Image 1 (spheres, rainbow, N blue to C red):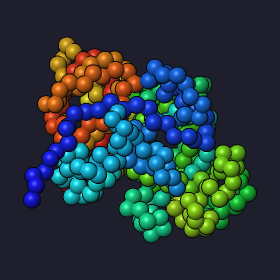
Image 2: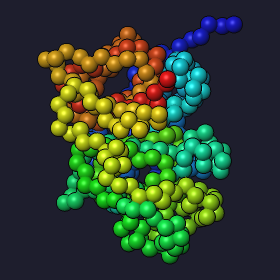
Image 3: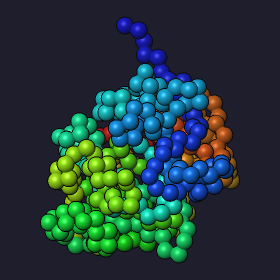
Image 4: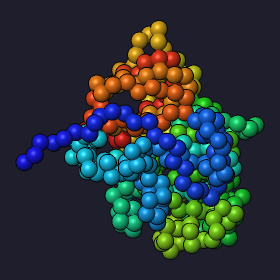
Length: 346
């Protein structure tokens, strides 16, 4: 048996990866990256091994050498992901990270659970997600999450059938947000994102969406239900009302926390992914990072990510994929970054 050959382990800065979307946005992504603005570039899929629904390659990230990240990980899963991760998830990264800049309100939609995805979509993963607000614009930046009170399934069916946008949106909790706020969005939760909200979004590694409010957003209803009949697709929806206690458990307000490292997400997110904000200051030395497959998004400032494989410069808007094989690392300099990681093992 040949010995295992690990990945090089060096962190890699990735170029933008903005598959075509149906909604407007992208100015904040362009500003963060210092790049020309693109029409209909509201999502940047970072270190993605996930394709857009029904497509062969759209959505996949490429490494600077031209290889698909998906292929590189599959060729050396232990080097990229680590032994414990591979034992739990095989060669899947179990994570999709996006930059999302909503130039218009997104439609009301929801995502399937793992169980639904296994039964109806042939996937191990559904699509639980979480939002980390990194910027806002406009007079009233808001997101929408969960029904305000228990919803009658027959009424929801009627709203969807007649495309009653006012009823759909009006039934949801409207949540004002600012930079530093985070929202965990369990599978099945009806939700939408308002215009002017700029996020780092963590998701399970699928592109499954059931679009309840498709009129004015998608070309036709056939694109709204993942190739399923409407009645089956709507079984993904959680009709339970999200009261104050539940919302409090899903939302964190971290913008005023000055700590060098701040856990960003609700504890309910741990089985799906986790994230922390890093605030490095050169006068305080570096921030040490344990070995892990991770995605690093630099929000501001400059510095260095130092590993046993060398040093990688960090700049505003930089997005990096860090293999588990990079080993322990240190973030140095004066900067703010978000570190995103797959589910905790054990």
